[in-house]
Amino acid sequence: MKNRLNRILLTVAILGMTGMPLIVGAQTPPSPPSHGAAGNQGKGGGGAPLDGGLAVSLALVAGYGAWKTFRKNREK
Image 1 (spheres, helix red, strand yellow):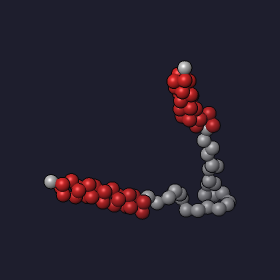
Image 2 (cartoon, helix red, strand yellow):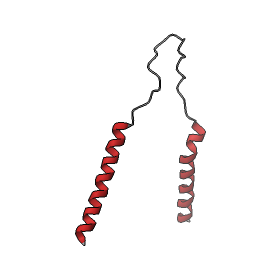
Image 3 (cartoon, helix red, strand yellow):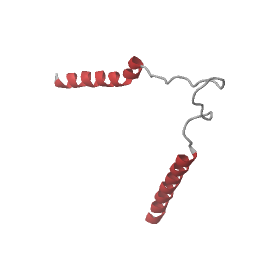
Image 4 (cartoon, one colour):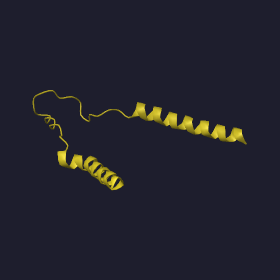
């Protein structure tokens, strides 16, 4: 009985977590004004640059791969 109850609770929890975004819905920010409109108009595009984080991430992955290869070759 306890095993069955745990399985049911786990299923409800997983369905609740995966279904929550569908129920709540994402709140999108208002769209920016067009070029002819008044207000704060920053440069277009928006978003964060990827170059710095991508370079660091690739360097870490390459370093980890080199370290694994070094250890594997050292064991032989």
